[in-house]
Amino acid sequence: MKDVFKLIMEAFTEHPSSVGESYFEHMLQAIKMSILSIFVCFVFFIHSIFPFLFKTLGCDIVRYINGKCNRGRTGHDEDDWV
Image (cartoon, rainbow, N blue to C red; front, side, top):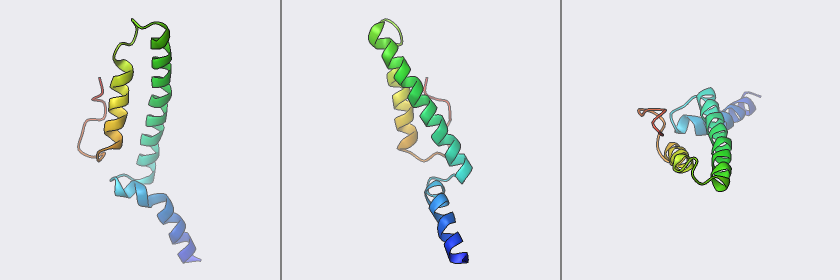
């Protein structure tokens, strides 16, 4: 029974620990990225109708998300996307 519990715990913690986060830290980062992704969809949609609005904001947010996904999450500013 302990082996099954250990396997289940590893399934939930292996990836977060590989990027230097606890399970809950990783969950909060993933939630933040999902909210930003929903927001950037709204920004691009509004920009498609009104091209004079949000001229660079959508791409700035996408760059921020890409940067967060392609580097370690420790030792950098969290809110440096603007």
